[in-house]
Amino acid sequence: MTKNAPPVRIALVLHGGAGTIDRNSMTPEREREYRAGIENALRAGHAILQTGGSSVDAVEATVRVLEDDPHFNAGRGSVFTSAGTNEMDAAIMDGKTLRAGAVGALEHVRNPIVLARAVMEKSKHVMMVGTGAEEFAKRNGIELADSKYFFTQRRWDALQKIKAKAKAGADGSEKFIISEAERHGTVGAVARDSEGNLAAATSTGGTDNKLPGRIGDSPVIGAGTYANNATCAVSCTGDGEFFVRAAVAHQVSALMELRGISLPEAAEQALGEAKRLGGAGGLIAVDKDGNVALPFNTSGMYRGYLRDNGKFIIDIYK
Image (cartoon, rainbow, N blue to C red; front, side):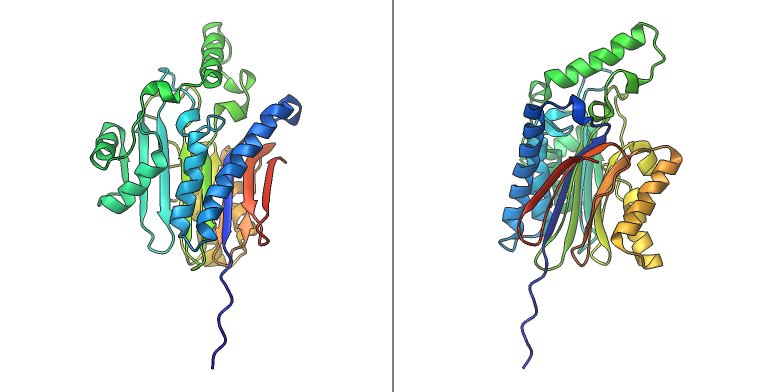
């Protein structure tokens, strides 16, 4: 007679963007708002995992909460392009099947991560962008929103600061005008469910003052998002162009598979490759055994994860 197998360890990790997040410039009220947003997202994902739901369902639910929260640069809180519009990207990947869906340059989809999943499950494609992606959203009954829904005064003011400085003949370096936390940001989640399946999801409004049509690493499978049951699930945040060039998310998996190193070591090495090219940021990851990693090389990263005892750990600063 064989003994019952022990329950599989569930895991959930999320991030809300990495950058220059200065403790001294963060008001207590604003910090509470960020922490509450992270906790709400963790609760949404945890509610699915603890009742035997799938990792794909969990990461989608977690990211949806962050997309609806105007504090984070995704969905409703997205930054503005140089043309004063919002353009959003997202991706999701199922580590069990290696199926993936991604969307880019969306202007009217309330929850880009929902559309990314629809691309994965209801189309023969991996990535769809722009008006074609939005038409696909309409055909599949995915909620759209007027551009006014995505307007937030804080993001608009940040864009105006950049433009005013450029008009005054400044050197064009945005980092002296607004913080890195304002200039970029991404949200993401990775999970391991009770059957041992991994999934990753990432969503972003991109970088402040980006050219219309710019696509970063978030929706690029293997760059900002990756999941494989054999190794790990990864979601990245930071200077997207460098994360694309270094294929950071897949690099974590490849290092584990080909070099046999641990998740924390692989995550640090992959992140280091982006830094070597000139990019700063961070990532979250969970491996096939439920171990997690949350490295970043900036002064802060909005982040949270679920401990084995069910307690949520939430942090912002280094």
